[in-house]
Image (cartoon, rainbow, N blue to C red; front, side, top):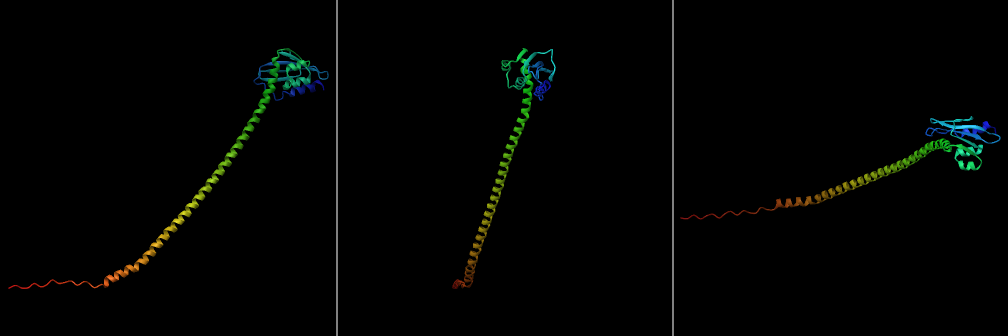
Length: 207
């Protein structure tokens, strides 16, 4: 692999980097590999990130490291201490390594936020669907209860009307039975002889 390809693989690590909230810094990097050795820099100025295949004279630090270790260092899979143990060297402010990583971490967090929002929206929709289903079931049950109550009330009303009609029929029947007896009594009363009225005795004349 030549330097150009190695540089592009490093630059790709910063494709979605976010440097808006990262302090200004400039890190010059020299890849020490025999087949792809060369110099590049990673810098942030006023929230703008730059990764270019040149040296940076007014830098905060200079890092000499192998390409594979550099990629691991940028991605957070390799610590600076471990990289130094493996042969890397750093001259200058070590804090720039954290600043460089911060641009990549910010991009990862920014990417994770929409995914989390999508998951929350999905859960909200799922909950809303459950609530809607329960509400619909409750409405159906309420309608069924109303219908049942209406049917029961209708049956009760019919029974009450039937009972009233039966009572009326019994009353009429009783009245019909009693009518001939009453007429007979009236007839007997008319046929009975009138009691004789006694006239008062005549007074004797006195002389």
